[in-house]
Structure formats: C-alpha cells, structure tokens
Image (cartoon, rainbow, N blue to C red; front, side):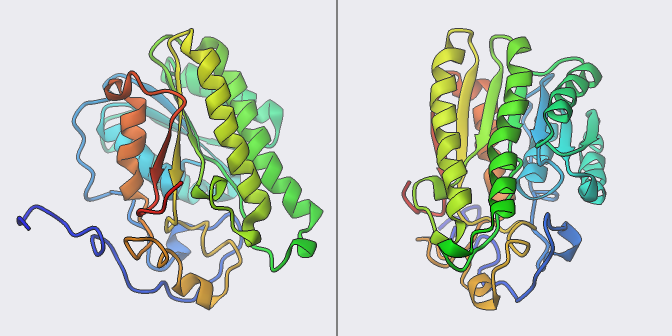
Length: 294
C-alpha cells in the first residue's frame, strides 16, 4: 500500500459509538464524537464554479458536508433547515462564506407548502439563480414493533420526507434550465428496510420512484435527476432516532467495511451528480453504503 492510500476499514473512527440520546432533530455539538463533514479534508477543484445550489436539511450531517464541498467547488449555497437548527446552520453558512461564496440560511418547516415554495423563491432571488437542488431533509424515529407505530410520528415522517420533498422540487422545477441537477438523499432503507424504521423506509422507497419517474420527464428539458443512497452515516439524526446503547454501539458494524461512514465520505457523490462529469447520468441511485448491496 502506498503512503497516499487509506484502508477504508479504518479511514475514520471504527470503535463503537458511545451511549447517547438527543431530542429531534439533533445537534452537532451534542453528538459524540462530532461528525466529520470535511471541514479540514475536502479539497475543491472548481467543478461547480458559478453554480447556485439549494440544500434542504443543509445545517448538519450530510447536508453540511455537501454544502462545504459545493462551496469549495465554487458554488453559492442556500440552506433550508428547521428554526431550532439555527446554530448549526450559522456554522455551516460561516464555512461556506470562508470560501468566498454566498451562503444563505432559510429557517422553516418544509411540511408547510407555503414555506417550501417561498424558500425556493428566496434562494433563487438571493443567489441570483438556481441550478442545483439537493432534497436532503428527512425525519426518522425508531419503533419497538409495528403496533407501537404512532400516527403522529408516522405523519411527521411522511410529511417531511415525501411532502417536503415534493413541495420543494415542484417549486424549483419550472424555472430550472438545461444543465440543472436535482439530487435526492434516498437510503439503503429503500432496498433493505429495517422493521424499526418501517415508515421511514417506505418514504425512501417512494423517493427512489420519484427520482426514476421525474428523470424521464426532466430529461427532455436537459435536467438530470438522481439520488444518493447512504448506508449508516454518523450524523446528529442517529442519536436522536431513539436507539439504545447496544444499537448505537453496533451502528454500521454490519457493513462489509465494518463501520459507519462520516458525512464527509458522501460529499464526493453529490459533487459528481451535480457536476458536468455526470452529464449522461440520470434516473440513477448511487450507493454509498460501505459495501452493502442495494
């Protein structure tokens, strides 16, 4: 192995995650260990120079990693996030601005159709355009058994992951021009659903159907639509899911690489799908799962 080659089994932390619990939606500074979003490691190469991106759920976790990467590749970035995530969003905006790119925070709840529509308008107006839409916002919770699934929790999952995605995409779609890219954060749960995440897994399977259907229509306009399907990723959402100490300790250990990923390890997938490097890729689901098959 050369000095520049990393063994992917231990490229990041591989010891068990410590016991912890947070309330939804989860905060970065309360997550132990703090996730690696690529703050000190991601190196840009100008692949998105002049592009304008909107990232939902962009304050922390995968969204923050994508925001950092996009900014370092030359894009201006607007983040949509819940109001209670403002501290995380401010930190992410600061990281965007450190790259001499425009960074914008748009707080609100995408389950609200009016807000979702206005967030797209505001992003387009303040960035002076919009040609990358990353639909990343999501909610999940753990249940002990199917009969314990509460309607209010199920509705929040469906409304966030499905309606929020559709509201945002629908608002952005009419004004996207040829060369634009829509990227959805799906999940391995769409293909290997866990009983404890049954409602979340259902929404992720629906998102895959959304990507494949919209890609057919959007292709005629020169717009590409794709998804990234993450496996187990260490983000604030994980300790806020409701899992016990044993579940957290084993999180990601069942992958062929034997560990969960850090958000930084997904950023390159989004950059690839947003850039002209993937100009012939649409309707695809890119797996970033540590070797777990879709």
